[in-house]
Length: 245
Image (cartoon, rainbow, N blue to C red; front, side, top):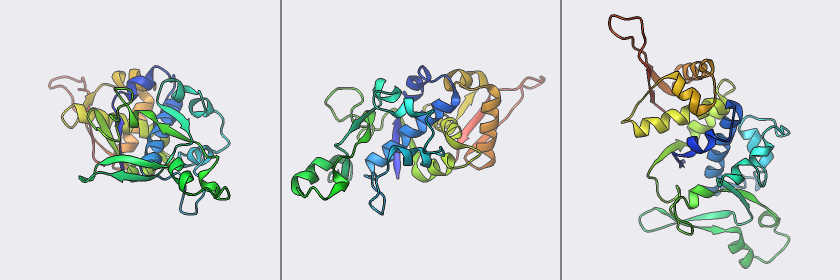
């Protein structure tokens, strides 16, 4: 399973989150709800609803943790900047065109029309967070979001996403750095050459934190890092980063 995220997410989030922990959670949360929506995963194999508590748990947080509620609640940060919105019109089946491209979704209301039995609670009284830029990105009312058009996006594979956010050493902060480097790889001909100062400014984290997590991502096989010094000098060139998973 793969989703595409808008490249502008880093710039948009950077001005609203002042520390790496909340920035990382917000980026990871937005990624996960893209997967839930695109692949109609709001109910698990046991027909249990994937609630906000379960989303927090999936992302490595205690379900009772309230420090991130201001980010994901109704009219919270992600709602206020136009990235998410609560809706009861969640998808139950993806519809594809003849070429295999995502065309539309069958929603809960479509099911309600055909199954009036109020005892079928799975489709009643449920709200989910919809990833708004996945539907409409540029022109209101037009399906030009990242579900449908992937220009100026970076892709995320579900298994890689899951393995990073659920790794106690990496978590959401590690995934934020991974995603940022993958985005940079996409716009810089397959690699990212950057100073720590640049990443510090965008990602709201210290040089020490960036060094720590890039080293962990490298050790665990997610990144390749090339380090060079300038000839006849003790000065180091900016590191070159390449996503390999």
